[in-house]
Image (cartoon, rainbow, N blue to C red):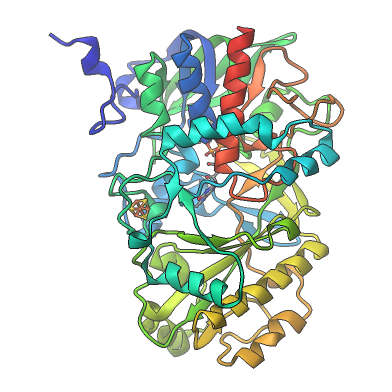
Length: 519
Ligand SMILES: Cc1cc2nc3c(=O)[nH]c(=O)nc-3n(C[C@H](O)[C@H](O)[C@H](O)COP(=O)(O)OP(=O)(O)OC[C@H]3O[C@@H](n4cnc5c(N)ncnc54)[C@H](O)[C@@H]3O)c2cc1C
Ligand code: SF4
C-alpha cells in the first residue's frame, strides 16, 4: 500500500508529485488559500515559504518538469524545449536585443549560469531616488541569508574554473583590477559549462530541484502544463485565474482550468506578468504596467589565445570583476554552447571556417551595463500571450558600454590574447595588435552598431510606495487590489546592478513573510 511518503519528491526524483498534462482527465477546477502563478525563482520561493507556514498553496506553471535526463546538449533543440519563442524573442526599438525567458518548471533558474550576487547597498539609494522606496540592503540581508542557505550558495572553487575562467582572472590581476570567484547555487559542479542547456550533472540547484520539492513536501500542490490567461477579480479583490491545459513542446490545448483562491501571487516573470495584467484589465490606473522595462545589455569580446585552452571546460561563468560596478559596468567570463557562440564569429566562407577551426583557442569575456538611462515597454500582443517588447538604448548608456568594451579589450590583452574578435559593427572583425585595439575607444559607437543581448530584465511592474509611481507597494502588493501580489523581477524599482536572480528571491522571501503576517 502506498503511503504519503511515496507521493513526495526525493533527491533522486525531485519532481515526484508534480502534476502534468498527462495526469489531467478533463477540465481542471481547484481552490486554495494562496495561488502562485509561475515557478521561477520568485514564485518557487513564495510557494515554499507559505506552504511551510501551513498555508494551502497551489503553484501553477506552463512549462514542463525537466529532469537531468531530459536536457539536450544541442542548443537548437535545447532552446526549443526550454525557452519561450524557441529562444528567438527580441525587443525592437533603436536596437534589436535578444532577450530569453524560460518556459519550464523552475523558470530561468534552469537555464541560467547560477550566478548569485547580492546588490551593494547603494543600489537601493538609486531605487529611492527613482520611485521613493525606503527598502535597504540591511532590510534584505536576512532574506539573502535564508535563500543562500537553502541553495547552498558558495564561491566557485579553483578546481572547476578551467583555463577560460583562469585567463580572465589573470587579465584582471595584471591590470590591477579586482576579480573574484563567482558565488553560485551549485553543489558538486563538474565544470562542464552546460548551464545554459540544463545541468545534466544534477549539480545546479535550480529552484525546480530545491524550492519546488520543498514546497511539495510542505503540502503545496504543483500543476504544470497550465497556462494562465486571465486573472479574475471582483472589485478590489482577485478571486483566481482562468487558463488552459497546454501540452509542452507541441502547445496542443487539452482543456480549460479555473483556480479560485483567497490570495493570488503573480510571478510569471517580467515579460509575462504585465501582459497578464493588461489582458485582465487590472492595475492599469497608475499607468506603469508594462512601462519602464529595464535591461542589462551585455556585449562580449572573444579573446584568441596562442595556445589551446579548451574553453568548454570549466564552470559556465567562474570569475567576475566588480571594480566598475558603481559606474554601471560589470565584467564576467562567459560561456554558451558552441553553436550559439558560433553566431558571434565574424566572416563568411573560408574566413568563418578559419575562426571555427581556432575554436579551442577562444574565450568570450563580456561586459554588462546597468543602462540606467535606457528603458522600454512590454505590451500584450493581440491574440497572444507573447509580449511585444520595445526598448530604447540611450546614447549615454551606449557610451558607457563603449568604455566597458575598452576595458574588456585591455583584460583580453593582459590575459595573454594574441588577437581579439570585437563583434561590433564598423570595427575590424579581428584585431591582432593591442595598439590597434584603441579603435574600440575612439570609434563613435551607436546603439545599432552593437549586438547586445539582455537576459536580465526587470521593472515592468515596478515598486513604489506611491500609487502614482508604481504598480506594487514595497510589500509586493498591487496598489489597486487588496490581495494581488507580484513576486518576479518586474517589481524592481531600478537596475539590480548585479545579476538579478538572488535579489528576486530575497524579495520573494520577504513578500512571503509579509503575506503570512496578513493572512
Ligand atoms: C540564459 C540566462 C542566463 C542567466 N544567468 C543568470 C545568472 O547566472 N544569475 C542571475 O542572477 N540571473 C541570471 N539570469 C536571469 C534570471 O534567470 C532571471 O532574472 C530570473 O529567472 C527571473 O526570475 P522570475 O521568477 O522573475 O521569472 P522567470 O524565471 O522567468 O519565471 C517565470 C515562470 O513563470 C512561467 N509563466 C510565465 N507565464 C505564465 C503563464 N501565463 N502561465 C503559467 N506560467 C507562466 C514561466 O514559464 C516561468 O517558468 C539569466 C537568464 C537567462 C535567460
Ligand atoms: S558548469 Fe556544468 S556541472 Fe556545473 S552547474 Fe553548470 S552545467 Fe552543472
